[in-house]
Image 1 (cartoon, rainbow, N blue to C red):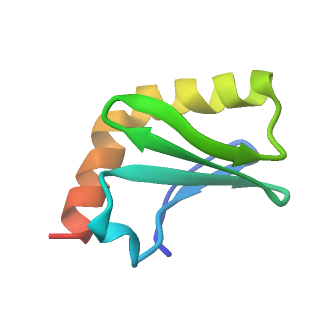
Image 2: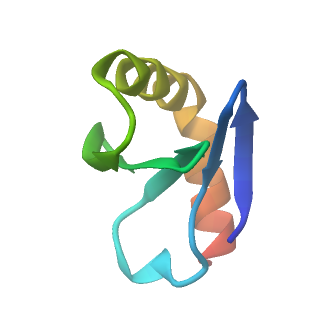
Length: 77
């Protein structure tokens, strides 16, 4: 499960078995998790992250979207 970014308390990653799905990223913080689709950036689901944190995470993903998509395509090529 490649980690593609660490930002503050958040770790952004994808699972090596995720290649059959559209590009997305998982985020974890202290046991709280979320999954965001990357094109366009939108929340799929979350558990344990409140709305303000989800907005912060979405903002991080939007800022890093080109690099995250590049990592996705390179990994699953």
